[in-house]
Image (cartoon, rainbow, N blue to C red; front, side, top):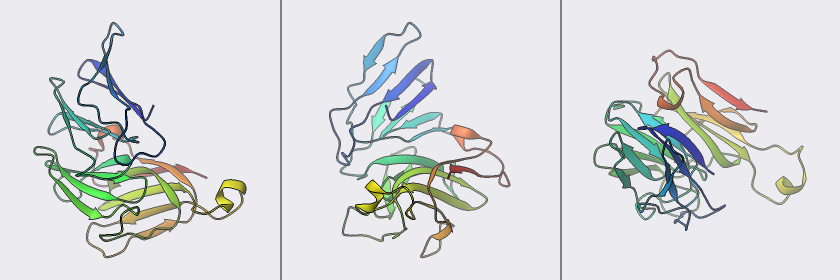
Length: 215
């Protein structure tokens, strides 16, 4: 299971395969109050762990799916937004109409909540083309925005040593102001989640604190 969210009188669940940035046979599930499980035909699988409720448009974004208050589901194809989606965050300059999607391999996309049009801001590191953040660490986990910054975390490291030794340097907590040509490294260590007082909606006050869980 990648994400679970109650929304529109249902429980929504996405499952995932370990490494499938182009989709898989995994599903989006709609679970009723009577615990009846519906497999949504809009499912395209992949490796999604992201979830966010966008208050202005009254939509739940979970995996590559956007679900409105009437439980209509729209899906962003992986051909349009490549990668393993791991987090969503409110947009820094147009939060009523845009959201951010981050992937486990440092991709960052801007998505229009109305049209689902996608713009690549930072390329997924699995792709050769595009602007890459080149952050240290590996395996993106959390994404959140606040205080004029987008904050991203990962908790792993490339290389064989990372599979064998718990004491090597790994992971990162990084921030971007939406304009700079590079990300700023806050701390080189393993972090798994970033959030704030507004939780899954992210729609708090501009000066709210940001919290990150890690080692």
